[in-house]
Image: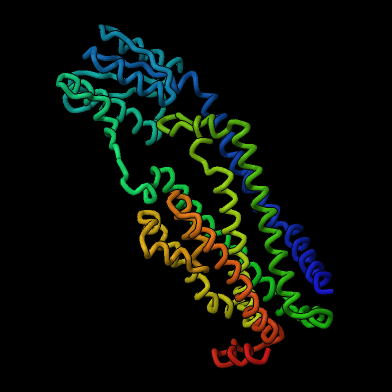
Length: 416
């Protein structure tokens, strides 16, 4: 009987939300619009490939054209090198007027000494394209001057290398890409938990406002209703996330992101699969999301039962938002020092674990036992919060009027 009631509420919540127009817009429209923007960008870029991206380099110094052409070709231009002689500039200007050439770059003695150059272009260039050209020119000039000494110009301009020998291997963590995986994943967890957990509160408020809850509770226990709502919204969230993951997979499989890589200074994406999280990290990400959602959705369900209007709920949910905001503010220090006592303690606190333990896991330095302990504590917290939220939900779901005070909440917990 219990699971029949939970299933009925679960099914109702899922169907009602999936059939809404906003679900369709957010789930299907979001990836579609993103793909459309990428496709349009590639299409417009490719249509002007032969003219705007073809550039000539006229080098009076005879030492800069080769490195400049090399860098511009890597950034997506088709480069022609022209010999500096009388009539060269006039001939190139005629090609620009007929749109046979996108532009030409003039390098002279001032370019060697101060990096100054002149670009003649069909249309005004974007700041990103101009920055790429300026970087190519300045790097070529610096390579020339450093090349006249015993220094390795290319190695110096690339920033050099730093070899690190770690004495304690357990405290070693990876490169900058791991930082972005840790930070991006933590921020994504914060967003999805906040959005979907608060959806449970809004569902409770809607039923209280329409008084439908009185009819529902005549045929089932309050905690059956709460559990059904939590599982129903969870199913909606997993459906939406699955659609987004499939959409991104299709975009990558179609090669759309690769079509923009390397253009005008954008990073190469040929080895994208090598820097993305592996299946194990993805599984942990889903686990952190599910347990984080279950913990916070129980608290939000109780909060919705305590309030009667959206205005009351907006004021009352500030503590919940702070519980999620605190770990977000601590993400960067935790990533920078994942093995410190403070990072370990904060990441093991169940309400912070979904965000902070993920940030530590993504750096690759967390002992397995700490990850396991965090999951055990989160599971125990799910049951504890469910018990606590269930008692508040049972007493507050039929309440109307003002928000209860702390003494009244304590009385509900004792009497429920």
